[in-house]
Image 1 (cartoon, helix red, strand yellow):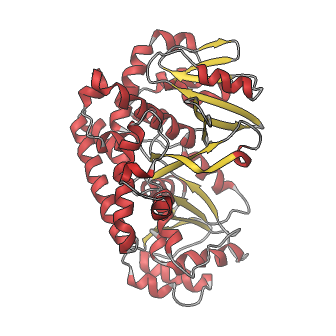
Image 2: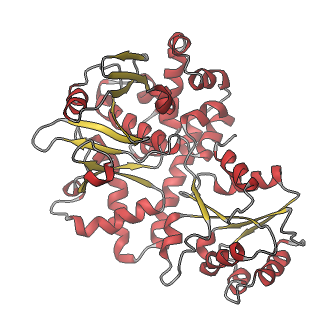
Image 3: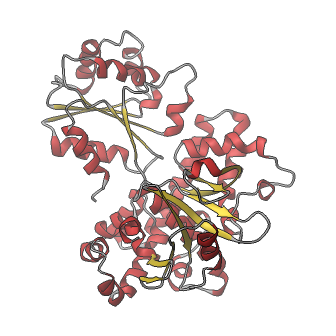
Length: 434
């Protein structure tokens, strides 16, 4: 399957003053595959070294950080001589060897060679090691997420439909809306985790995708006990397992008492931070108004918590494929949770946006997401079906003197006075459609 992140790596390769690149992201989002595929396509040789449970490498990086010395050790480990100018060096699971992370600084400062070094690790693992300084200013970094809906369309052989979205041919999109709707519902179930997508496509089986998702959820639960202090494990599990119930509420603001009666913020703040740091959750904060810069109007006490992947959310909620694809009366409320999860995921992965949300102080008014783009505030309301009411959105636009708001739903693209409706399956074109 193709990943959009490959373009970022190709651009990095051509940078004359490139720094080592760290690829960060949750477990099983495809970091290893991306690095190895990039090495296979673009380099004469690829020196792939996994640092997990690698005692030799722990000893190598415990010594001096002279690049020539380290290269000799890496050459012995991978079994061939590393020529910096034509070999891609991959240090996988770099969080397991703190010295390897620190060594990147010395490679970036060595002007004897032009190094091509990729490293990968979980955000949590990189942040865990006390006393290890991150080489700020000496490395580049990029985040890798599950496959976006656009990447899913391409992987599933729907390049022509994807082209319609990229060309913003909304008249043709309208003609094939049933195809887009079916594929979007499929994505709600399968999600974007590469293993789940591959299992679904190879076997044409929803159950195969669900088996991968359940295995991933079990793996994440085991990771909690591996990486965090024992006192935090129950709290992390409680927050993680409680996300579906938080998003099932009409007001999706994270409420600590939903976890357990009498729960307080200070008990769970660290657990939430760890889940976000390891890439498993997205924390979307509240803003008090729609002004520039949005960060200046954050309400640090209020936030929503979304998962890394809509398919994992469906699996954790134990939703079967018939419920999602065909719908049912009892599914109506949670459909909104899946839709918001989907939109949040696309905003971050496709548009590199930092989403917030707004809610009124003393009323039920709320705007699902508020974005800042090129100095402009863009309020975004999310509707699971074709509900075209947008009272809160319109009042927010008026109160903040904004030129327009955006509603994304299953309805077709249309422009009205101060309101743009963008189909959910075309949310990746938000910036180009406003």
